[in-house]
Image (cartoon, rainbow, N blue to C red):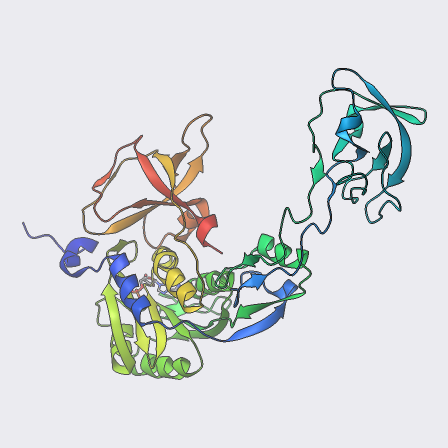
Length: 422
Ligand code: AMP
Ligand code: MG
């Protein structure tokens, strides 16, 4: 019996594996080269433009890790209590104005510099909770380890070491580390300028009147948010009608002032799908029908020297293809050195059948299991247009090109949205 072409297997023959498409596009892309200096408060999510070498030790001095009492361990009785007179006090931000003598203890607070003294000075700090103050004497129990609660100069960062490498995406810890060595700014790659538009005669701007047969544009808003999460400078070019000349002119105009153009809709095989022809007229297509579900129709290419990413129209397919195609391409274009996001093992809480020859993504929410792998359960309806199912999901279970499906209880590969929506 002839199979009607209502499913995605109709074009099985010519599907390009995702990895192959990515390689093709990456081989052609030259990352943006501009570097600008930005204040630390403005670099979250940006890509570091040069290596950063520390000019100083952090911490700059040996210091106490606790509130307590500094001692020379060799002054203490190994087997019984020791009583030492209190000789002075040093708080954070101060330093003891004389060396600590053998046979005395100094009151010290977290972050305060260790006193100098005989040899390398007192070597050990007791937590205040572990000792007893008796008038002007402190009573120490036996058994502390030499060097306890003492932090060393440079134990975090040593002067002269490279603390951050060019290409690193800057998150909160990277920004804090730069501040810890006294930087107020960082050199970052110029933000990618990305133009976004939607296509479709039925697609209307939210907030406007909607006539029968039309829908509100969700894709542009999803895409703008995804792009901003990647640190891109986004230009919103609105909604284009399903009209070849209009789309072609818009692509050509956007190409001049952007590093990448991203669209949704209009890349299938219907006669109202004009994006692909417009790209071929103004540039070159590197990949078109990809082995990915949801998402199959994706047009990757170049328009007048600017990267072009034509995503499908269905809102879930937009997100899945953005995360697996647009995101790695845009990060590479932006000069980022970002590893492939990890997949985590989970137990499939559902059975799933597929054909070999394309990778598939299932929207799931995760139920923790005490002492075992978390269970991934299907989130919502599986249609490629069901955006609410993405809201219900924590991430995606990935089935590789070769896989034929999953049985309930199988270990599956899980990609949390938290890994890739930033
Ligand atoms: P297309 O790829 O243009 O054939 O669109 C596939 C499906 O996605 C159709 O049901 C469209 O109505 C829908 N769609 C296309 N663009 C958008 C958009 N910007 N927002 C929401 N749905 C869309
Ligand atoms: Mg359309």
